[in-house]
Amino acid sequence: MTTILIKPKSKSEYNLLTRLLKKMNIEIQVVEEALPNYETMKAIEDVENKNGVRANDAQDLFTKLGI
Image (cartoon, rainbow, N blue to C red; front, side):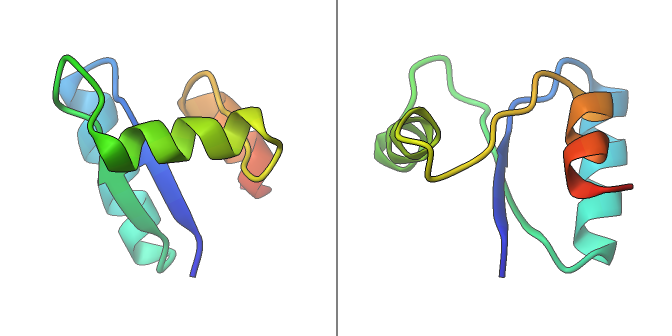
């Protein structure tokens, strides 16, 4: 299963992404804290080490997922 860590910019983006990705059977982790916790830092490190993909916004994410 693919895991995506997201930090939505608005409530509407949060709702859209969580509903869409759950329907696609993609596990998500929503970043809500001001300072990243261990799991968030690990995900950020994975992306920096090329073990993940970074998306700047919902449109970029959809493009990278092929939607």
